[in-house]
Image 1 (cartoon, one colour):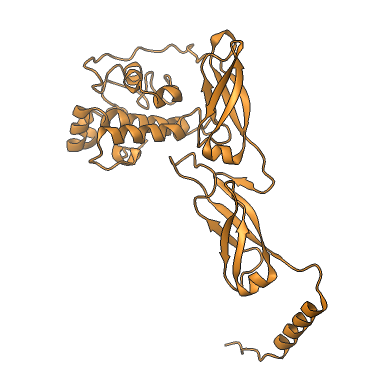
Image 2: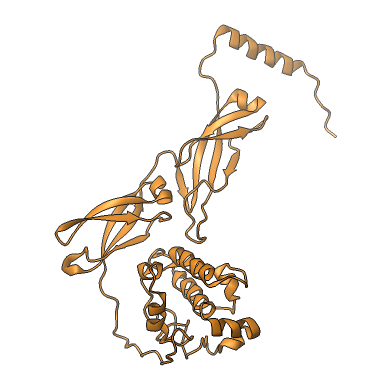
Length: 311
């Protein structure tokens, strides 16, 4: 991957303190971790890039060298992050080599232990510098125990609680806010033999919406008079209806965007998609005599109105 600026990768200013850098990394890891994006072949590369940026910027000496000399100051070789990490900066070389740390460990407080394991203290986390141990071609991750869990659109935004059976007991599990289709939530020790159980998120279908990535498409029913004269209409969102101002002369099929009202965006920490509301102009099914007379008068007025010549 190209030598992108580490500050840009984490989305922090160059003067950010340690707490801001750690917070930014945790937020990025939450949405970029391969476990959260199992169907995205590029997820692991993006996650490695973010982790490399954190590794450098969280170490005072390496950060100072990077600020002064850029990537050359931190010993870039063949992707040569300090300490001889091969491939994409992980033990064992190229893409797919080495272990990716579990998301739950990253979101905990053991980031130093994770980097000591992954990089052997190579970037100055601690004073020990040791080369990463080679991995054999036969090493594999342990089998994962998975179980689907249904989550509503609103729960994917706000989070939820679920109860699972594990080890002969009931366990209450927190489904964090921001999960999407295919996200995995780890429950320690809940699988047979004390192994970890992964709850695989399945978004429940909602007849009101059509899911398009992090955007939600919805039909907005607009009375013919509001479409002609303008007015306020109600539009469904997962968090409840909101009011939409419809300008005069709104055509059937026009789409209005309600920014930030959709589902969590897996590619942008803390961001949400949009609601795309498509206008469906509603014609009256029946007219009383007075209403019909008014429509007849409108038709007569429009049929006798002078037409504007075409330039």
